[in-house]
Image 1: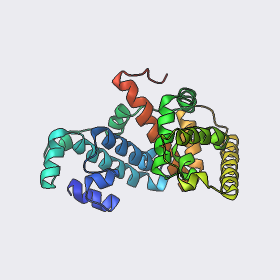
Image 2 (image 1 turned 90 degrees about the vertical axis):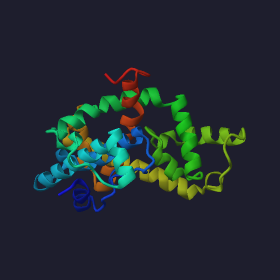
Image 3 (image 1 turned 180 degrees about the horizontal axis):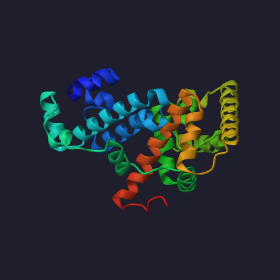
Image 4 (image 1 turned 30 degrees about the horizontal axis):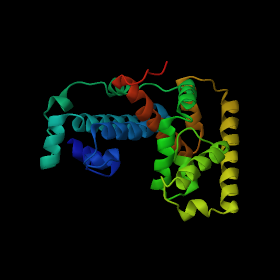
Length: 255
C-alpha cells in the first residue's frame, strides 16, 4: 500500500498537507511545526497498551509524510503531480522513525517551560504575540488568553493593559468584544481558569510529579482529551518558538 493510501486509511485524508494540518504553501518551518504538533498526539508513548501498535503505525506514517514534504525534490514532485515516489530513498531507506523524531525535536521538561516563561514574559516577543492574538481574534479575551503562551488568569490585567495602551496609541483597532466585554464574561473566564489550575495541581499531587520529561508526559496523560490537546499544542508552540531558534544560533538552547 502506498503512502497516500496509508494516510487515507490512518487519518482519513490522502493529502499530505492536510494530514499535517498545514497549507500547501506552508514554509519548511510550518511543515516541521505541523509534523511535531500532530505527532505529539499519536506518539506511541502516549497510547494505551491496547492502542500502542496502531499508534506506532500512525507515527511511522507521519514520519514518512514529513520526510517527503521536507525533501525539496520529493515535495516538488508531489506538488506538481500529486504522487509520491515510493521508490525514493526518502521512503525506502531503513529508518527508525522514533530516533528520527528525537533528532528533530528536543525533549521538553517542566523546568524548560519554567525557564522559557521567565524569558518570555514582558519580552518584545510576548508583546508581539499579544497584539497578533488581539487582531486574530477580534478582541475576544477568551481566545486571546488561551492562545498567548505562559499566561494564566492572574496575567489578565497586564494583558488588558498592554492591549488598551496599543488601542489608545492607535496601533491596534478598537474591537467591541474587547472594550465592551461584560463583567459576567470576565468572571466566567476567571472561574474556569481557577478551576483548571486546581485540577492541574491536584493531578500533580496525586501522581507525585517532579520536573522530568516523563513526569510532564504523565501529567498530560492524566488530563481529559481536550486538555491534553491544549498541552500538546502548547508544547508544539514551545518547540517552534524556542528550540528552533537555538538551532539557528540566534539564542542559546535550553539547558
